[in-house]
Structures are given as structure tokens and as C-alpha cells.
Length: 269
Picture 1 (cartoon, rainbow, N blue to C red):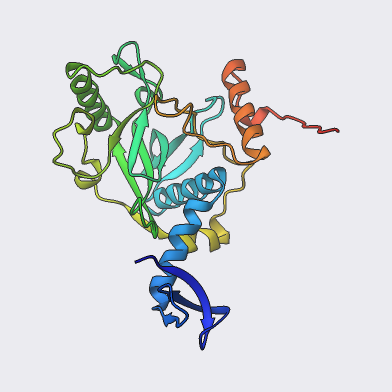
Picture 2: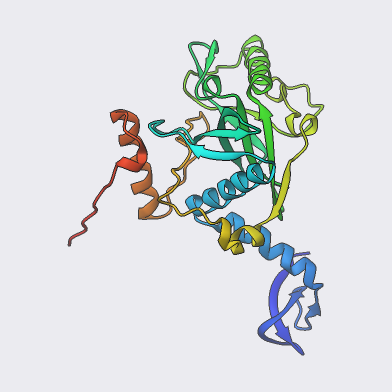
């Protein structure tokens, strides 16, 4: 039976009183917490991709800071969202990944003997929705890069041995959660089971936490990861998205930090 979410009072549609209509004129009250969950899930999925990315990066950085790390973005790294992470006087290099489906990607290089970005870092900081279908919060994980490389190497080897085509410089994905599926593409899963989340944040708290807002001119979007299913994982919905992409590609070609690239757009009829 189809459900229609509406707002109503005494059978008449009005604001601020959610109900569900079961295809008949008499609405039934719906529990407030379920309404809030539906709105929360819809809000993240309907965000501009760049806005959702910034919110998730904000969660990743906040989680790392709560775990005792001090983060400083590395300059001159082109498209890589790479930071120096210092804790207890020890500094390591860290790469941030965000995911709204609980899979993460790194591109293989030189027929899988190297991994783009992953080979240059010590830690991988991941910001992931708690549930891909009904996201209510953001889970933050820190994984040792050596362990992540081992998982990606195993997944790459399994795919090749099963006749899959894995292209250099195109994203290859592994699943964060534990899965008993024997498919080659599922080899390497379970990082989140072996390394539990260090922090959890509701989407509301990340939006409302003014003290931890990271303005868009202070961070740059993560590297574009090409894959065989889509042209890129970056979906253009606004002119701002296109300009962000253009700045990133110019930085990649020129070797300049993305922060140093500015573009001016003029539209005329």
C-alpha cells in the first residue's frame, strides 16, 4: 500500500502536523520520531552534492579532533583531501574519504602495484552514513593505511583472478561493513567491523554546530574518482558544482593547490 506523507489537522491539510494518508480521505497521525527520521533521510539525499560532502568532511574532522588529533591540511596536494594529523607529538599523513553508501574507493595505478593517494598516507579517515537507505547520522572511522592497502590488494587480486577488468586511475571500491558474500567485488570487506567508529554525529548536530563549521574556502573537495559505472562520482546540479570541478581539474593539470585557482564566470544573452 502506498503511503503519502502530508501535514494535517482534523482531516484538513495544514502545516506542522505530519500525518500519513493511506489513499483515503481520513488521515492517521504518525509518530513524531518516525516523521523526523523520514525528513532526516530525505534531507541528506536531496542536498547539493558539494554541501553534503562538506557536511560529511566536517564530521570527519570533528571526529578526529575529538579523538585527540590536530589536523592541518597539506598544501600543494592538488585534488587530494590530505592532512597532517598530530596526536601525542606524533604526526602522520591522513586522507579523508566520505561515503553515502558505506563503500570507499581508491584508484589503482600501474596494474594494481600502487594506489593513488593511499600509498602516500599513514591513516584513512572515513565519514560514512550509518545507513545507506535511511541515513540518520554520520559514523567516523580511522583506519591504518597499511590495513586499507591490504584490503584493496586482496580485492584487486580477487577481481583479476575472476576475469574482471580493473582499470588504472579508476576508482575500485571495497565495502566497509562485514559481508559473507563470496563475490570477488566483496573481497576486502569489514573494515568497520574490525575498527569500530570513533565518533557518531547526527546530521542536525553537524548542521547546527557553528563552532565547528568549516567554510568552503578553507577546504577543497576530495579528488575526483573515475569509475566504470559513471563518468565520475561527482554529480553536477548547480553552476557552483561545475566551477568547483573546473578549479579542481585546473589544479590537477597545473600542479597548483586548488585554493590558488579562482575562476570568473560571465553569462550573457
